[in-house]
Image (cartoon, rainbow, N blue to C red; front, side, top):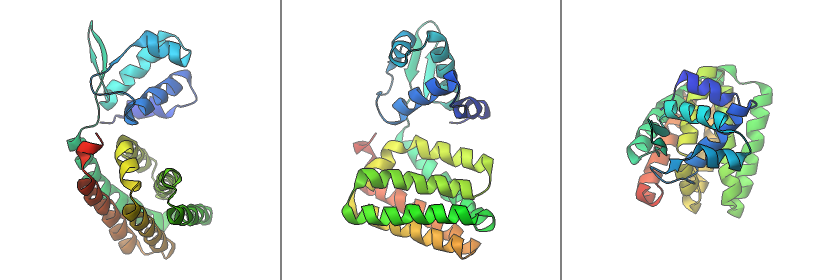
Length: 226
């Protein structure tokens, strides 16, 4: 559901087209729009304070990602992430995050270690307080830091996209007390393995973490989320 061109334009968040792209993308992935909702250029342009042109360009890029279907002479329609997509994403993420953790043991900097440590300390604090909204933000931040520490721009882009695609699912599962505790503990274990420069352990723990998330999603029930 991703493309090099789509990533290139979508990542250019400082351009007008990039900002419009990110705004519509966020609305789709956060569940603001339901499946097959028509995305009207004029209405979106008015809401964002832009002309129809950047909206039209953004919709074309979102079509390349698979999040929008454009039907000639009819319009653009939301193409939501499906249960099958979610399952596929997590299986692929399990392998790629393992690779990312392995590479992070080789390329992580002292500054990146400090940033991840700070995120973990905050996560542990908010886990104890059951501040799930803040914990969701910190969960996302930890993974962003892990992807950056992996040292691969390509792998970072791929994993970041996958992470965004399952935004609603992640938010639902992290809001349960049992998963929030184990997830934070798993993050700590991954971090310690990276800090110890143990690539085999870091890779195994990262894969296990994603697999546990899949199990949590299955227990929660995808039908409650999507």
